[in-house]
Length: 581
Image (cartoon, rainbow, N blue to C red; front, side, top):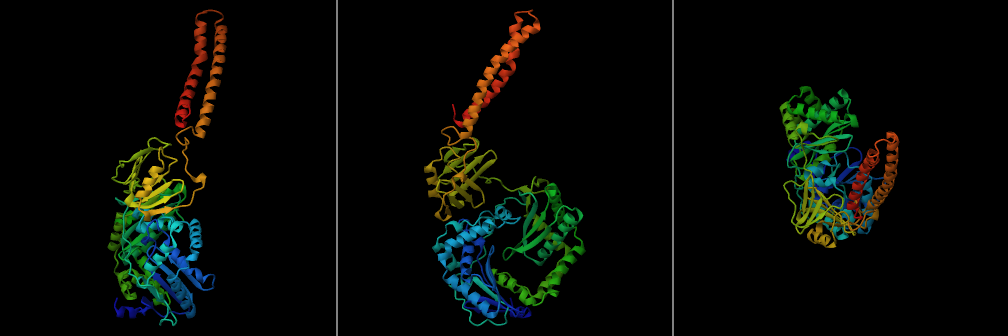
């Protein structure tokens, strides 16, 4: 960006201790942010949470303070933020950098626990599933996954991550001050400027849909970053609110959001809540609104209202340059162009109805819709793959499920596969994003495409220690996450049988009562047959003596024999399932 454009925004670029820095004068307290180009999308599933650990450790020494400060680990960046007097801001930034140079790793175990507690109480949001289905268990998809790294990463691994990612070349500093405050010491190790994460895809066909929880309908799509796309998100949100809340009364919240993903693309997310009985109407309403916008049936008033909303921000914001400074710094961090106020206003003014229609079509072309209840095939959406597309079972040892003989686990040197009546999931060891390993032999493998296979010796026949050892030897060590022992009650057990070698407890109980039922019914049958013969004799008044025994036995045995046969069949089935004789 030219120096002329920077002057228009009153933003000045400089450098502090090798860190790119942007400044602009602001009224009131000084606000500053130190951002690093590293976030959750730069990790692996096995190391998920390492950036968050570094952030927590860097802030530990600040403790409880009246100073307004915080840290945040986002998808592609980590930010340390502070507001206060000049001396307070200097002290905070110096403290963060000192901690990054020498992390208080004696706190590592405590911070692990804090992060796990934080995760347990944090909801993932209504759209928490969309990234993993769109991107898989890597890159931008990792925001959907648990922070496995907090369970096993060593002090050396955390220290190395800080030393290679939290570097001066990989950072940008912004301060609402016309000069660099005195006393700043932001010395950090040197390191390369890290590029944005590689974009992956786990969706072979779009638009696609997945099944979600009751109460919410969510859709997202990827579009090129532009003023037209930002305006479209505003138009979409207003249209959803008008149709789903004001007209239909189906939703309380109906909105849309525009969020930059990287230097070239952004994510538009649409959301609407619904009562269970109104969910189908909400899905239909959202699809109808998007179809209308795709068809170009957009009123000029809709565009003008959205444009006015953006322009109002310029007219009613004091210290405009200071307000835009954080966004300016983040764009600088990831390499996206910055616009002056006049340039942005000009772009907004140039957006036409045709531009909005093209954004709508781009959004729909790669949309991912999360729906409760029934699917969305009727609206042109294809269900996202539920099994590994185009894969076949591996040629290793086969281990039938103890619960369902039609489910078979295959263990081979090159990977594992789970065959079910619905299809096959295959995870090759060299494509394993993470393998959670428990001391009892249980393993949970997650492929880079997001599919998971639970390898539980308790659930599959003949799955002994040798097979588990084969998996352990084949999965790359960097993908292995060793977990503490599970509570015995959390180890999965077959629903029908025990260990496959003898009767299961519930199977034995059913077997006993079914056998007892047969004995009781046998005795009742004899009594009933005698009673039937006597009753038949009385009915015929002594005539037809040859017919009496035949009719009596038939009446006495027909119903009991049918019941006996049904119970005996059930007993045989239970005996076969449980291993009882």
